[in-house]
Image (cartoon, rainbow over all chains, first blue to last red; front, top):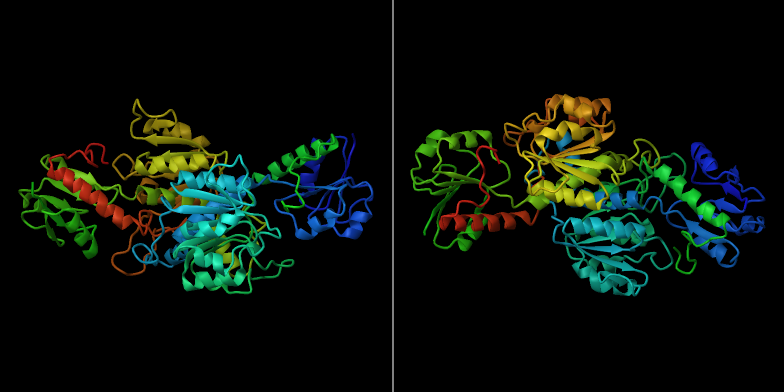
Length: 317
Length: 317
Protein backbone atom coordinates (compact mmCIF):
# COMPACT_ATOMS: atom_id res chain seq x y z
CA UNK A 1 0.00 0.00 0.00
CA UNK A 2 1.27 3.47 -0.83
CA UNK A 3 1.71 5.86 2.06
CA UNK A 4 2.08 9.58 2.44
CA UNK A 5 4.94 10.26 4.88
CA UNK A 6 5.55 13.82 6.03
CA UNK A 7 8.80 14.76 7.77
CA UNK A 8 8.75 17.73 10.11
CA UNK A 9 11.62 16.64 12.36
CA UNK A 10 14.49 14.22 12.64
CA UNK A 11 15.89 14.05 9.12
CA UNK A 12 17.96 16.56 7.19
CA UNK A 13 18.06 16.70 3.41
CA UNK A 14 20.48 13.82 2.99
CA UNK A 15 18.54 11.78 5.53
CA UNK A 16 15.30 12.38 3.59
CA UNK A 17 16.97 11.39 0.34
CA UNK A 18 18.22 8.21 1.90
CA UNK A 19 14.76 7.49 3.33
CA UNK A 20 13.24 8.11 -0.07
CA UNK A 21 15.53 5.51 -1.64
CA UNK A 22 14.66 2.97 1.07
CA UNK A 23 10.91 3.65 0.88
CA UNK A 24 10.26 3.54 -2.85
CA UNK A 25 6.60 4.15 -3.62
CA UNK A 26 6.06 6.22 -0.49
CA UNK A 27 5.03 9.83 -1.08
CA UNK A 28 7.50 11.88 0.95
CA UNK A 29 6.95 15.54 1.80
CA UNK A 30 8.64 17.73 4.38
CA UNK A 31 8.38 21.04 6.23
CA UNK A 32 7.20 22.22 9.59
CA UNK A 33 3.51 22.26 8.51
CA UNK A 34 2.28 18.77 7.60
CA UNK A 35 0.87 18.13 4.14
CA UNK A 36 -2.97 17.80 4.31
CA UNK A 37 -2.81 14.22 3.02
CA UNK A 38 -0.19 13.09 5.55
CA UNK A 39 -0.75 9.54 6.79
CA UNK A 40 2.48 9.07 8.77
CA UNK A 41 4.06 12.12 10.37
CA UNK A 42 7.57 12.41 11.76
CA UNK A 43 7.40 15.16 14.37
CA UNK A 44 8.18 16.02 17.98
CA UNK A 45 4.99 17.98 18.63
CA UNK A 46 1.44 18.35 17.28
CA UNK A 47 -1.35 20.66 18.38
CA UNK A 48 -4.91 19.29 18.62
CA UNK A 49 -5.93 21.71 15.83
CA UNK A 50 -3.28 20.39 13.46
CA UNK A 51 -4.22 16.81 14.25
CA UNK A 52 -7.86 17.53 13.47
CA UNK A 53 -6.84 19.01 10.11
CA UNK A 54 -5.22 15.73 9.04
CA UNK A 55 -8.10 13.30 8.35
CA UNK A 56 -5.83 10.57 6.92
CA UNK A 57 -3.25 10.66 9.72
CA UNK A 58 -2.86 7.27 11.34
CA UNK A 59 0.64 7.27 12.78
CA UNK A 60 3.00 9.74 14.45
CA UNK A 61 6.68 8.89 14.79
CA UNK A 62 8.74 10.87 17.26
CA UNK A 63 12.13 10.30 15.64
CA UNK A 64 14.14 10.09 18.89
CA UNK A 65 13.72 8.49 22.32
CA UNK A 66 11.15 10.12 24.59
CA UNK A 67 7.73 11.63 23.87
CA UNK A 68 6.47 15.00 25.17
CA UNK A 69 3.56 14.68 27.56
CA UNK A 70 1.45 17.14 25.55
CA UNK A 71 1.60 14.90 22.52
CA UNK A 72 0.50 11.91 24.57
CA UNK A 73 -2.40 13.96 25.96
CA UNK A 74 -3.50 15.05 22.50
CA UNK A 75 -3.50 11.46 21.24
CA UNK A 76 -5.43 10.03 24.18
CA UNK A 77 -8.69 11.19 22.62
CA UNK A 78 -7.63 10.18 19.07
CA UNK A 79 -7.25 6.38 19.17
CA UNK A 80 -7.12 6.15 15.36
CA UNK A 81 -3.56 7.54 15.49
CA UNK A 82 -0.79 5.29 16.80
CA UNK A 83 2.27 6.88 18.40
CA UNK A 84 5.79 5.55 17.87
CA UNK A 85 9.28 6.25 19.12
CA UNK A 86 12.66 5.50 17.55
CA UNK A 87 15.14 3.70 19.83
CA UNK A 88 17.94 3.65 17.28
CA UNK A 89 20.38 5.39 19.62
CA UNK A 90 20.20 3.15 22.67
CA UNK A 91 23.83 2.04 22.27
CA UNK A 92 25.05 5.62 21.99
CA UNK A 93 23.07 6.75 25.01
CA UNK A 94 24.22 3.77 27.07
CA UNK A 95 27.83 4.61 26.22
CA UNK A 96 27.20 8.19 27.32
CA UNK A 97 25.74 7.01 30.61
CA UNK A 98 28.84 4.92 31.36
CA UNK A 99 31.12 7.71 30.10
CA UNK A 100 29.49 10.13 32.55
CA UNK A 101 29.56 7.60 35.40
CA UNK A 102 33.30 7.02 34.98
CA UNK A 103 34.06 10.67 34.27
CA UNK A 104 32.22 11.63 37.46
CA UNK A 105 33.90 8.95 39.58
CA UNK A 106 37.31 10.13 38.32
CA UNK A 107 36.38 13.83 38.07
CA UNK A 108 38.03 13.83 34.65
CA UNK A 109 37.15 17.37 33.47
CA UNK A 110 38.53 18.83 36.70
CA UNK A 111 41.76 16.81 36.41
CA UNK A 112 42.03 17.77 32.74
CA UNK A 113 41.63 21.48 33.54
CA UNK A 114 44.32 21.29 36.20
CA UNK A 115 47.01 19.42 34.30
CA UNK A 116 46.53 21.76 31.32
CA UNK A 117 47.81 24.44 33.72
CA UNK A 118 50.69 22.21 34.81
CA UNK A 119 49.06 21.31 38.12
CA UNK A 120 49.37 17.67 39.22
CA UNK A 121 47.61 18.19 42.56
CA UNK A 122 44.99 15.51 41.87
CA UNK A 123 47.68 12.83 41.28
CA UNK A 124 48.00 11.93 44.93
CA UNK A 125 45.59 14.45 46.44
CA UNK A 126 41.92 14.70 47.10
CA UNK A 127 39.34 14.06 45.88
CA UNK A 128 40.16 10.39 45.65
CA UNK A 129 38.52 8.67 42.70
CA UNK A 130 35.91 6.11 43.61
CA UNK A 131 36.47 2.55 42.53
CA UNK A 132 33.21 1.34 41.00
CA UNK A 133 34.17 -2.34 41.11
CA UNK A 134 32.25 -3.99 43.93
CA UNK A 135 29.80 -1.09 44.37
CA UNK A 136 26.11 -1.12 43.48
CA UNK A 137 24.56 0.66 40.50
CA UNK A 138 20.83 1.37 40.60
CA UNK A 139 19.41 1.91 37.14
CA UNK A 140 16.20 3.92 37.04
CA UNK A 141 14.24 2.93 33.94
CA UNK A 142 15.33 -0.32 32.40
CA UNK A 143 14.36 -0.02 28.76
CA UNK A 144 16.68 -0.45 25.80
CA UNK A 145 19.22 2.00 27.27
CA UNK A 146 19.14 0.79 30.87
CA UNK A 147 19.58 -2.86 29.94
CA UNK A 148 22.75 -1.96 28.03
CA UNK A 149 24.09 0.12 30.91
CA UNK A 150 23.43 -2.78 33.28
CA UNK A 151 25.50 -5.13 31.12
CA UNK A 152 28.49 -2.76 31.07
CA UNK A 153 28.31 -2.02 34.80
CA UNK A 154 28.25 -5.71 35.54
CA UNK A 155 31.38 -6.21 33.40
CA UNK A 156 33.06 -3.56 35.58
CA UNK A 157 32.37 -5.75 38.59
CA UNK A 158 29.45 -3.67 39.88
CA UNK A 159 26.36 -5.14 41.43
CA UNK A 160 23.37 -3.95 39.42
CA UNK A 161 19.77 -3.47 40.42
CA UNK A 162 17.16 -1.94 38.18
CA UNK A 163 13.82 -0.32 38.77
CA UNK A 164 11.14 -0.02 36.12
CA UNK A 165 7.49 0.97 36.16
CA UNK A 166 6.24 -2.54 36.80
CA UNK A 167 8.27 -5.67 37.30
CA UNK A 168 7.19 -8.30 34.80
CA UNK A 169 6.99 -12.00 35.74
CA UNK A 170 9.70 -12.71 33.14
CA UNK A 171 12.09 -10.08 34.56
CA UNK A 172 15.38 -11.22 36.10
CA UNK A 173 15.72 -11.12 39.90
CA UNK A 174 17.78 -7.91 39.85
CA UNK A 175 14.82 -6.01 38.37
CA UNK A 176 12.33 -4.28 40.66
CA UNK A 177 9.25 -2.10 40.38
CA UNK A 178 9.20 1.67 41.01
CA UNK A 179 7.58 0.92 44.37
CA UNK A 180 10.87 -0.53 45.63
CA UNK A 181 12.98 2.51 44.71
CA UNK A 182 13.26 3.93 48.22
CA UNK A 183 14.24 0.63 49.79
CA UNK A 184 17.01 0.14 47.18
CA UNK A 185 18.54 3.64 47.36
CA UNK A 186 20.54 3.20 50.61
CA UNK A 187 22.83 0.71 48.85
CA UNK A 188 22.99 2.58 45.52
CA UNK A 189 26.46 4.00 45.21
CA UNK A 190 25.62 5.05 41.67
CA UNK A 191 22.13 6.09 40.58
CA UNK A 192 21.84 6.07 36.80
CA UNK A 193 18.72 7.69 35.36
CA UNK A 194 17.84 6.35 31.90
CA UNK A 195 14.05 6.60 32.23
CA UNK A 196 11.79 8.63 29.95
CA UNK A 197 10.00 11.65 31.38
CA UNK A 198 6.43 10.67 32.18
CA UNK A 199 3.88 11.87 34.70
CA UNK A 200 5.22 9.15 37.00
CA UNK A 201 8.95 9.84 36.64
CA UNK A 202 8.74 13.65 36.81
CA UNK A 203 10.46 14.65 40.05
CA UNK A 204 10.83 11.00 41.07
CA UNK A 205 14.31 11.71 42.46
CA UNK A 206 13.89 14.51 44.99
CA UNK A 207 15.60 15.60 48.20
CA UNK A 208 14.25 12.55 50.07
CA UNK A 209 15.58 10.08 47.51
CA UNK A 210 19.01 11.75 47.27
CA UNK A 211 19.30 11.75 51.07
CA UNK A 212 18.60 8.00 51.06
CA UNK A 213 21.68 7.39 48.91
CA UNK A 214 24.89 6.64 50.81
CA UNK A 215 27.26 9.61 51.27
CA UNK A 216 29.80 9.81 48.46
CA UNK A 217 27.42 8.49 45.81
CA UNK A 218 27.28 9.40 42.14
CA UNK A 219 24.26 10.45 40.09
CA UNK A 220 24.10 10.13 36.30
CA UNK A 221 21.22 11.50 34.23
CA UNK A 222 20.85 10.67 30.55
CA UNK A 223 17.04 10.40 30.78
CA UNK A 224 15.46 13.81 31.18
CA UNK A 225 16.42 16.62 33.54
CA UNK A 226 13.02 16.96 35.17
CA UNK A 227 13.15 13.40 36.55
CA UNK A 228 15.64 14.69 39.14
CA UNK A 229 14.62 17.68 41.24
CA UNK A 230 16.84 20.57 40.14
CA UNK A 231 17.28 22.27 43.52
CA UNK A 232 17.74 19.01 45.44
CA UNK A 233 20.42 17.81 43.00
CA UNK A 234 22.32 21.08 43.17
CA UNK A 235 22.14 21.01 46.97
CA UNK A 236 23.39 17.42 47.25
CA UNK A 237 26.36 18.19 44.99
CA UNK A 238 27.17 21.46 46.73
CA UNK A 239 27.08 19.86 50.19
CA UNK A 240 29.18 16.91 49.03
CA UNK A 241 26.55 14.34 50.00
CA UNK A 242 26.84 13.30 46.37
CA UNK A 243 30.55 12.94 45.55
CA UNK A 244 29.93 13.67 41.89
CA UNK A 245 27.45 13.69 39.03
CA UNK A 246 27.46 13.30 35.28
CA UNK A 247 24.59 15.17 33.67
CA UNK A 248 23.57 15.12 30.01
CA UNK A 249 19.90 16.10 30.28
CA UNK A 250 19.14 19.48 31.78
CA UNK A 251 16.60 21.95 33.09
CA UNK A 252 17.06 24.94 30.81
CA UNK A 253 17.67 24.69 27.08
CA UNK A 254 18.77 27.39 24.65
CA UNK A 255 16.29 28.95 22.28
CA UNK A 256 18.20 29.34 19.07
CA UNK A 257 21.90 30.11 19.26
CA UNK A 258 22.22 32.38 22.28
CA UNK A 259 24.36 31.34 25.25
CA UNK A 260 22.32 29.61 27.93
CA UNK A 261 23.34 28.06 31.21
CA UNK A 262 21.57 24.71 31.69
CA UNK A 263 19.97 25.42 35.06
CA UNK A 264 18.76 28.27 37.23
CA UNK A 265 21.29 26.96 39.80
CA UNK A 266 25.04 27.49 39.24
CA UNK A 267 26.00 23.91 38.39
CA UNK A 268 28.73 25.46 36.24
CA UNK A 269 30.48 26.61 39.42
CA UNK A 270 30.66 23.09 40.85
CA UNK A 271 33.89 21.14 40.37
CA UNK A 272 32.29 17.73 40.98
CA UNK A 273 29.97 17.63 37.96
CA UNK A 274 30.73 16.45 34.45
CA UNK A 275 28.44 18.57 32.27
CA UNK A 276 27.39 17.56 28.77
CA UNK A 277 25.08 19.45 26.39
CA UNK A 278 22.41 16.74 25.87
CA UNK A 279 24.26 14.71 23.29
CA UNK A 280 23.83 11.22 24.71
CA UNK A 281 22.14 9.88 21.64
CA UNK A 282 24.51 11.48 19.18
CA UNK A 283 27.30 9.58 17.47
CA UNK A 284 28.74 9.50 13.99
CA UNK A 285 27.08 6.22 13.09
CA UNK A 286 23.72 7.04 14.65
CA UNK A 287 22.18 8.95 11.71
CA UNK A 288 22.47 5.86 9.53
CA UNK A 289 20.80 3.82 12.25
CA UNK A 290 17.99 6.37 12.58
CA UNK A 291 17.21 6.10 8.88
CA UNK A 292 17.28 2.29 8.95
CA UNK A 293 14.99 2.15 11.99
CA UNK A 294 12.64 4.72 10.45
CA UNK A 295 12.41 2.86 7.15
CA UNK A 296 11.68 -0.41 8.94
CA UNK A 297 8.95 1.21 11.02
CA UNK A 298 7.30 2.94 8.04
CA UNK A 299 7.31 -0.33 6.07
CA UNK A 300 5.59 -2.09 8.96
CA UNK A 301 2.98 0.67 9.18
CA UNK A 302 2.40 0.34 5.43
CA UNK A 303 1.48 -3.32 5.93
CA UNK A 304 -0.91 -2.38 8.73
CA UNK A 305 1.38 -3.50 11.58
CA UNK A 306 1.33 -0.68 14.12
CA UNK A 307 2.96 -2.64 16.95
CA UNK A 308 6.58 -1.71 16.31
CA UNK A 309 8.14 0.81 18.75
CA UNK A 310 4.62 1.80 19.72
CA UNK A 311 4.20 4.11 22.68
CA UNK A 312 1.71 2.97 25.30
CA UNK A 313 -0.20 6.18 26.00
CA UNK A 314 -1.08 5.09 29.53
CA UNK A 315 2.52 4.36 30.49
CA UNK A 316 3.91 7.28 28.50
CA UNK A 317 6.69 5.33 26.74
CA UNK B 1 59.89 -17.54 60.50
CA UNK B 2 60.38 -13.94 61.59
CA UNK B 3 61.22 -11.45 58.89
CA UNK B 4 62.66 -7.96 58.80
CA UNK B 5 60.55 -5.84 56.46
CA UNK B 6 61.73 -2.34 55.59
CA UNK B 7 59.36 0.14 53.96
CA UNK B 8 60.87 2.92 51.85
CA UNK B 9 57.88 3.46 49.56
CA UNK B 10 54.22 2.71 49.15
CA UNK B 11 52.81 2.97 52.67
CA UNK B 12 52.14 6.01 54.81
CA UNK B 13 52.03 5.90 58.59
CA UNK B 14 48.53 4.50 58.83
CA UNK B 15 49.35 1.96 56.09
CA UNK B 16 52.41 0.82 58.04
CA UNK B 17 50.39 0.51 61.23
CA UNK B 18 47.83 -1.58 59.45
CA UNK B 19 50.56 -3.76 57.92
CA UNK B 20 52.10 -4.18 61.36
CA UNK B 21 48.80 -5.46 62.71
CA UNK B 22 48.43 -7.91 59.82
CA UNK B 23 52.04 -9.12 60.04
CA UNK B 24 52.46 -9.80 63.73
CA UNK B 25 55.96 -11.02 64.52
CA UNK B 26 57.51 -9.26 61.54
CA UNK B 27 60.10 -6.59 62.39
CA UNK B 28 58.98 -3.49 60.54
CA UNK B 29 61.21 -0.48 59.94
CA UNK B 30 60.82 2.44 57.56
CA UNK B 31 62.67 5.35 55.99
CA UNK B 32 64.34 6.06 52.67
CA UNK B 33 67.57 4.27 53.72
CA UNK B 34 66.97 0.56 54.35
CA UNK B 35 67.83 -0.91 57.74
CA UNK B 36 71.05 -3.01 57.51
CA UNK B 37 69.19 -6.18 58.51
CA UNK B 38 66.41 -5.74 55.92
CA UNK B 39 65.25 -9.03 54.41
CA UNK B 40 62.24 -7.77 52.46
CA UNK B 41 62.34 -4.23 51.11
CA UNK B 42 59.43 -2.22 49.79
CA UNK B 43 60.93 0.31 47.39
CA UNK B 44 60.75 1.69 43.86
CA UNK B 45 64.51 1.93 43.32
CA UNK B 46 67.75 0.50 44.66
CA UNK B 47 71.35 1.28 43.70
CA UNK B 48 73.83 -1.60 43.34
CA UNK B 49 75.80 -0.16 46.28
CA UNK B 50 72.77 -0.23 48.57
CA UNK B 51 71.92 -3.77 47.49
CA UNK B 52 75.45 -4.91 48.29
CA UNK B 53 75.18 -3.37 51.75
CA UNK B 54 72.16 -5.56 52.59
CA UNK B 55 73.52 -9.09 53.08
CA UNK B 56 70.24 -10.52 54.31
CA UNK B 57 68.05 -9.02 51.57
CA UNK B 58 66.15 -11.70 49.69
CA UNK B 59 63.11 -9.94 48.30
CA UNK B 60 62.24 -6.53 46.87
CA UNK B 61 58.62 -5.51 46.50
CA UNK B 62 57.80 -2.61 44.20
CA UNK B 63 54.51 -1.61 45.82
CA UNK B 64 52.75 -0.62 42.59
CA UNK B 65 52.43 -1.96 39.05
CA UNK B 66 55.51 -1.58 36.86
CA UNK B 67 59.21 -1.95 37.65
CA UNK B 68 61.96 0.52 36.61
CA UNK B 69 64.42 -0.98 34.14
CA UNK B 70 67.41 0.03 36.32
CA UNK B 71 66.13 -2.08 39.18
CA UNK B 72 65.74 -5.09 36.90
CA UNK B 73 69.28 -4.57 35.63
CA UNK B 74 70.68 -4.39 39.15
CA UNK B 75 68.95 -7.62 40.13
CA UNK B 76 70.04 -9.58 37.09
CA UNK B 77 73.42 -10.22 38.72
CA UNK B 78 71.90 -10.84 42.17
CA UNK B 79 69.77 -13.98 41.80
CA UNK B 80 69.46 -14.42 45.57
CA UNK B 81 66.99 -11.47 45.59
CA UNK B 82 63.53 -12.07 44.13
CA UNK B 83 61.63 -9.09 42.70
CA UNK B 84 57.88 -8.63 43.18
CA UNK B 85 55.20 -6.26 42.03
CA UNK B 86 51.84 -5.43 43.58
CA UNK B 87 48.87 -5.66 41.22
CA UNK B 88 46.33 -4.56 43.79
CA UNK B 89 45.07 -1.68 41.64
CA UNK B 90 44.23 -3.51 38.42
CA UNK B 91 40.50 -2.79 38.80
CA UNK B 92 41.12 0.92 39.36
CA UNK B 93 43.46 1.18 36.40
CA UNK B 94 41.08 -0.74 34.14
CA UNK B 95 38.27 1.64 35.11
CA UNK B 96 40.54 4.57 34.27
CA UNK B 97 41.34 3.07 30.86
CA UNK B 98 37.63 2.76 30.03
CA UNK B 99 36.93 6.19 31.53
CA UNK B 100 39.54 7.73 29.22
CA UNK B 101 38.32 5.74 26.21
CA UNK B 102 34.75 6.98 26.64
CA UNK B 103 35.79 10.49 27.62
CA UNK B 104 37.93 10.68 24.47
CA UNK B 105 35.21 9.28 22.20
CA UNK B 106 32.74 11.84 23.61
CA UNK B 107 35.31 14.64 24.11
CA UNK B 108 33.79 15.17 27.55
CA UNK B 109 36.24 17.79 28.95
CA UNK B 110 35.75 19.93 25.86
CA UNK B 111 31.95 19.68 26.07
CA UNK B 112 32.10 20.38 29.80
CA UNK B 113 34.23 23.50 29.27
CA UNK B 114 31.81 24.80 26.65
CA UNK B 115 28.53 24.30 28.48
CA UNK B 116 29.99 25.92 31.60
CA UNK B 117 30.18 29.04 29.42
CA UNK B 118 26.61 28.53 28.23
CA UNK B 119 27.69 27.20 24.83
CA UNK B 120 25.70 24.24 23.48
CA UNK B 121 27.58 24.08 20.16
CA UNK B 122 28.58 20.45 20.61
CA UNK B 123 24.96 19.35 21.05
CA UNK B 124 24.30 18.95 17.36
CA UNK B 125 27.63 20.13 15.98
CA UNK B 126 31.00 18.67 15.26
CA UNK B 127 32.95 16.80 16.42
CA UNK B 128 30.49 13.95 16.40
CA UNK B 129 31.09 11.44 19.17
CA UNK B 130 32.17 8.01 18.02
CA UNK B 131 29.96 5.07 18.86
CA UNK B 132 32.25 2.37 20.23
CA UNK B 133 29.66 -0.40 19.89
CA UNK B 134 30.62 -2.57 16.94
CA UNK B 135 34.16 -1.16 16.66
CA UNK B 136 37.38 -2.99 17.47
CA UNK B 137 39.54 -2.37 20.55
CA UNK B 138 43.16 -3.50 20.44
CA UNK B 139 44.61 -3.94 23.91
CA UNK B 140 48.37 -3.71 24.09
CA UNK B 141 49.59 -5.72 27.06
CA UNK B 142 47.06 -8.17 28.39
CA UNK B 143 47.99 -8.62 32.02
CA UNK B 144 45.71 -8.12 34.99
CA UNK B 145 44.65 -4.66 33.74
CA UNK B 146 44.22 -5.50 30.05
CA UNK B 147 42.09 -8.56 30.75
CA UNK B 148 39.69 -6.41 32.77
CA UNK B 149 39.54 -3.74 30.06
CA UNK B 150 38.79 -6.44 27.49
CA UNK B 151 35.82 -7.67 29.52
CA UNK B 152 34.31 -4.18 29.79
CA UNK B 153 34.87 -3.35 26.11
CA UNK B 154 33.18 -6.59 25.13
CA UNK B 155 30.17 -5.68 27.27
CA UNK B 156 29.98 -2.40 25.30
CA UNK B 157 29.59 -4.44 22.13
CA UNK B 158 33.16 -3.91 20.94
CA UNK B 159 35.23 -6.56 19.27
CA UNK B 160 38.39 -7.07 21.28
CA UNK B 161 41.81 -8.27 20.25
CA UNK B 162 44.80 -8.32 22.57
CA UNK B 163 48.52 -8.44 22.03
CA UNK B 164 50.96 -9.61 24.66
CA UNK B 165 54.65 -10.49 24.62
CA UNK B 166 54.09 -14.11 23.73
CA UNK B 167 50.84 -15.86 23.04
CA UNK B 168 50.50 -18.85 25.37
CA UNK B 169 48.93 -22.11 24.17
CA UNK B 170 46.15 -21.65 26.73
CA UNK B 171 45.34 -18.11 25.54
CA UNK B 172 41.92 -17.45 23.96
CA UNK B 173 41.74 -16.93 20.21
CA UNK B 174 41.46 -13.15 20.52
CA UNK B 175 44.93 -12.99 22.06
CA UNK B 176 47.99 -12.48 19.85
CA UNK B 177 51.73 -12.05 20.24
CA UNK B 178 53.57 -8.72 19.86
CA UNK B 179 54.69 -9.90 16.43
CA UNK B 180 51.12 -9.52 15.12
CA UNK B 181 50.70 -5.93 16.29
CA UNK B 182 51.18 -4.29 12.90
CA UNK B 183 48.78 -6.62 11.13
CA UNK B 184 46.07 -5.93 13.73
CA UNK B 185 46.37 -2.13 13.83
CA UNK B 186 44.46 -1.33 10.59
CA UNK B 187 41.23 -2.55 12.22
CA UNK B 188 41.93 -1.09 15.65
CA UNK B 189 39.55 1.80 16.10
CA UNK B 190 40.72 2.07 19.70
CA UNK B 191 44.25 1.25 20.81
CA UNK B 192 44.43 0.84 24.58
CA UNK B 193 47.91 0.68 26.07
CA UNK B 194 47.99 -1.16 29.41
CA UNK B 195 51.45 -2.71 29.02
CA UNK B 196 54.37 -2.17 31.41
CA UNK B 197 57.40 -0.26 30.17
CA UNK B 198 60.09 -2.76 29.23
CA UNK B 199 62.94 -2.72 26.76
CA UNK B 200 60.51 -4.31 24.30
CA UNK B 201 57.56 -1.96 24.80
CA UNK B 202 59.55 1.29 24.90
CA UNK B 203 58.59 3.21 21.75
CA UNK B 204 56.53 0.25 20.49
CA UNK B 205 53.84 2.63 19.21
CA UNK B 206 55.58 5.06 16.86
CA UNK B 207 54.64 7.05 13.77
CA UNK B 208 54.41 3.86 11.67
CA UNK B 209 52.03 2.15 14.08
CA UNK B 210 49.79 5.22 14.49
CA UNK B 211 49.61 5.62 10.71
CA UNK B 212 48.45 2.01 10.43
CA UNK B 213 45.41 2.78 12.59
CA UNK B 214 42.25 3.76 10.71
CA UNK B 215 41.58 7.53 10.50
CA UNK B 216 39.40 8.70 13.35
CA UNK B 217 40.82 6.24 15.85
CA UNK B 218 41.31 6.72 19.57
CA UNK B 219 44.42 6.06 21.65
CA UNK B 220 44.34 5.44 25.40
CA UNK B 221 47.49 5.14 27.51
CA UNK B 222 47.36 3.97 31.13
CA UNK B 223 50.59 1.95 30.81
CA UNK B 224 53.59 4.23 30.62
CA UNK B 225 54.14 7.32 28.48
CA UNK B 226 57.33 6.11 26.81
CA UNK B 227 55.56 3.14 25.19
CA UNK B 228 54.01 5.63 22.75
CA UNK B 229 56.37 7.93 20.85
CA UNK B 230 55.76 11.44 22.17
CA UNK B 231 56.23 13.38 18.94
CA UNK B 232 54.32 10.87 16.80
CA UNK B 233 51.35 10.92 19.20
CA UNK B 234 51.23 14.69 19.28
CA UNK B 235 51.42 14.81 15.49
CA UNK B 236 48.62 12.26 14.99
CA UNK B 237 46.33 14.19 17.34
CA UNK B 238 47.20 17.58 15.85
CA UNK B 239 46.57 16.36 12.29
CA UNK B 240 43.31 14.68 13.27
CA UNK B 241 44.43 11.25 12.06
CA UNK B 242 43.62 10.23 15.62
CA UNK B 243 40.18 11.61 16.48
CA UNK B 244 41.01 11.71 20.17
CA UNK B 245 43.14 10.35 22.96
CA UNK B 246 42.87 9.74 26.70
CA UNK B 247 46.26 9.90 28.39
CA UNK B 248 47.04 9.13 32.01
CA UNK B 249 50.76 8.25 31.77
CA UNK B 250 53.07 10.98 30.48
CA UNK B 251 56.49 12.05 29.32
CA UNK B 252 57.46 14.72 31.81
CA UNK B 253 56.71 14.53 35.53
CA UNK B 254 56.99 17.25 38.15
CA UNK B 255 59.87 17.25 40.61
CA UNK B 256 58.29 18.32 43.86
CA UNK B 257 55.40 20.76 43.77
CA UNK B 258 56.26 23.12 40.92
CA UNK B 259 53.95 23.42 37.92
CA UNK B 260 54.97 21.11 35.10
CA UNK B 261 53.40 20.44 31.73
CA UNK B 262 53.39 16.72 31.00
CA UNK B 263 55.19 16.82 27.65
CA UNK B 264 57.65 18.91 25.67
CA UNK B 265 54.86 19.13 23.05
CA UNK B 266 51.79 21.34 23.71
CA UNK B 267 49.24 18.58 24.31
CA UNK B 268 47.53 21.09 26.63
CA UNK B 269 46.59 23.16 23.57
CA UNK B 270 44.78 20.24 21.89
CA UNK B 271 41.01 20.02 22.28
CA UNK B 272 40.83 16.33 21.41
CA UNK B 273 42.74 14.92 24.37
CA UNK B 274 41.46 14.00 27.81
CA UNK B 275 44.45 14.62 30.08
CA UNK B 276 44.81 12.98 33.47
CA UNK B 277 47.72 13.38 35.95
CA UNK B 278 48.76 9.70 36.24
CA UNK B 279 46.15 8.60 38.71
CA UNK B 280 44.90 5.43 37.04
CA UNK B 281 45.70 3.23 39.98
CA UNK B 282 44.31 5.59 42.59
CA UNK B 283 40.93 5.12 44.21
CA UNK B 284 39.56 5.48 47.68
CA UNK B 285 39.43 1.74 48.32
CA UNK B 286 42.81 0.98 46.76
CA UNK B 287 44.99 1.69 49.82
CA UNK B 288 43.20 -1.04 51.74
CA UNK B 289 43.76 -3.42 48.84
CA UNK B 290 47.45 -2.49 48.67
CA UNK B 291 47.90 -3.39 52.33
CA UNK B 292 46.04 -6.69 51.96
CA UNK B 293 48.06 -7.68 48.88
CA UNK B 294 51.31 -6.66 50.58
CA UNK B 295 50.55 -8.65 53.74
CA UNK B 296 49.67 -11.73 51.69
CA UNK B 297 52.89 -11.46 49.70
CA UNK B 298 55.09 -10.94 52.78
CA UNK B 299 53.47 -13.92 54.51
CA UNK B 300 54.22 -16.08 51.47
CA UNK B 301 57.84 -14.89 51.42
CA UNK B 302 58.09 -15.73 55.12
CA UNK B 303 57.16 -19.34 54.34
CA UNK B 304 59.79 -19.46 51.61
CA UNK B 305 57.32 -19.13 48.70
CA UNK B 306 58.78 -16.49 46.37
CA UNK B 307 56.48 -17.24 43.42
CA UNK B 308 53.69 -14.73 44.18
CA UNK B 309 53.59 -11.60 41.97
CA UNK B 310 57.20 -12.34 41.04
CA UNK B 311 58.72 -10.30 38.23
CA UNK B 312 60.44 -12.30 35.51
CA UNK B 313 63.66 -10.33 35.03
CA UNK B 314 64.02 -11.46 31.42
CA UNK B 315 60.50 -10.31 30.45
CA UNK B 316 60.64 -7.24 32.67
CA UNK B 317 57.22 -7.76 34.33
